[in-house]
Amino acid sequence: MASPSPSMTRGPIPGMEPTFEFSAAEGRFVTKPIDMGSQGQQVFLILFGTGMRKPTGVVRATIDGEQVAVNGPLAHAFLIGIDQVNLGALSRNFIGRGEVDVIVFVDDKPSNTVKFNIR
Image (cartoon, rainbow, N blue to C red; front, side, top):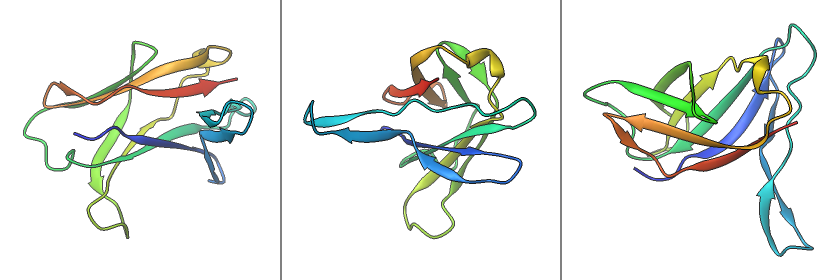
């Protein structure tokens, strides 16, 4: 399974924003701190990858070692060959944790760890 590529959406009116940005000073991509919004808003982490579709068992995910709700994996609506996994709505308990690890488990096989930065 390939490493998922994360993006984030915030409700109730969905809008997507990337969870990483290029740092010219460091010469590499770094995590972008994501604001969880105001009380009442829901935040979902959307992961894209390959090799996750049609699992034979359980699909689960952790953020900073904590189980989170999983929807998917599903075939992406218009990107051929790309699978999508939606995590959340994310708990507001994650606020202020900074950079955390995100791992998706498909049929008990872990994805590569990706980073997500929560302001």
